[in-house]
Image 1 (cartoon, helix red, strand yellow):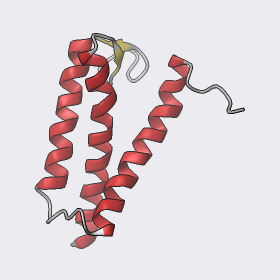
Image 2 (cartoon, one colour; image 1 turned 180 degrees about the horizontal axis):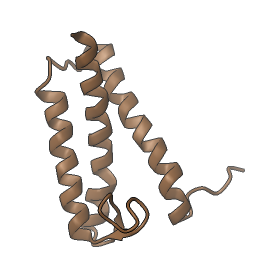
Image 3 (cartoon, one colour; image 1 turned 90 degrees about the vertical axis):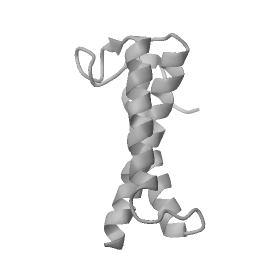
Image 4 (cartoon, helix red, strand yellow; image 1 turned 135 degrees about the horizontal axis):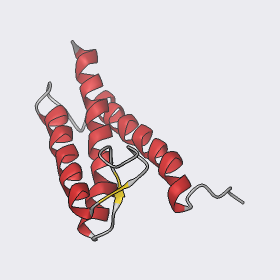
Length: 108
């Protein structure tokens, strides 16, 4: 059962990290991509839709981390699973959304 807890923490890390750009853009009044835009993940959604989507991700992330197993900040496996989930979605976002926002310039 421990691997299911680690999977939950990984997915919790994905959801928590995904909440950040949506909440920041939405609270700043800027449109940003959401799964509800046309085309999905490429078109822009309103700042209100981003706040709602970001908040939903925050709740899901919290539920996956706080309500599954006994997440312990002192347990390296728990923290690593959460961090790897956050890193994975962050790298995906950087690559995917960078092409829309100029973030994929080659490093020099």
